[in-house]
Amino acid sequence: LKLSVPRKLRGQLADKAKALLKKDIELKFPDGKAKVEVSSSAGAMTVIASKQPTGVKTVKNLAANLPDKTQVTIDDDWVELECKKAKIASGWVKNKHIVGRPATGAKLKIRDAGGYGSVMVRKAAKQDEGKNVAGYLADDTDVTILKHWIEAAWDAAEGGGGLFGGGAVPAGRGFIPGCDVPEDDVTLQGKSEDCWAAATDLGKALGVELNAEQVGGGGEPAAKGRGKGAKGRGRGRGRGRG
Image (cartoon, rainbow, N blue to C red):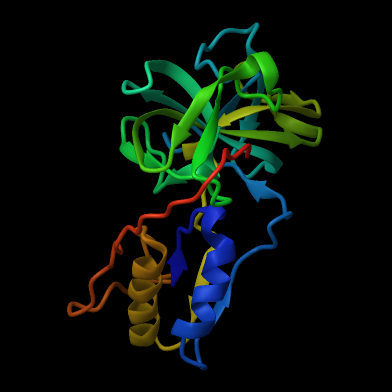
């Protein structure tokens, strides 16, 4: 089976798998520092990388047109959000502090990944603090997701890029929509029925839908469901910095 597992949860995935998987099921996923391939979620065959995560598609803001399967190195994982309670119309946090998948328009909760009890919200998607801090949101505060962005770098390629595709792609860095950096590079190998059951159990343990898909044909057994999992609540003290 092929699974779509958020990269922010893969440390937990390895731990959960030890307790949940049968001995004859093998879990495989890339090293956290490995390069990943981009793939247009719209089927455009190329992915637009922007210099700044504004969504403005202009020549000035274009970092590169990356052909599908271009390998990139992920530098950071950003989420732009809105929080009406805190009167933040647009702020930035690391994806690891968002509970669930940060799909555009989703209403989710924020929770500091380090257990500090609150999350720093930045004014811009950059590491700077100081004047770049918009405020702090306490764990379990409701937020609305505006956009998910992957900050990444790539090597030069001889063809397939350019403004309208087809030209060489110089080495560079920029921001890529999160939906164009797939997370479906996790696999379970073993008996089909056991793998489907394991996928359900892992999804429940992680609290997300893993969107399991049979590799090489076949489908989900009729009696097997895909568990979304319960969402836990965590509390802590202090202020997380991400």
